[in-house]
Image (cartoon, rainbow, N blue to C red):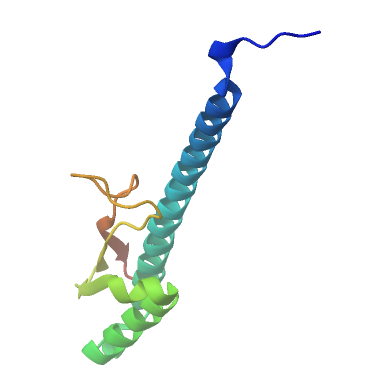
Length: 132
């Protein structure tokens, strides 16, 4: 006949609850990092594609309307997140520069003084022009 100790009642429940809470928090952290990295790489790829497309055009085909069309197409590849992304185009005779800014994207709520683990994007993609 086994005898229970009075001081250990409920101890397995406490350990299980702590273990499940740790597992859920680590899973949420991993998902947050994954979403943040996806957002950074997708925004970076959209800006690079836009810069390459504009750099491949002959200089006489470059206009504000064409720049706006290429930027809008690049933002539309990001889906609903593209509405929060801003892109601006600058060009010279030698290169095309696309400056892109996007906020960070994550699943976890913002903690005091912080945000997503993976930050937003603020960079300029420069592509040399094709020689015509």
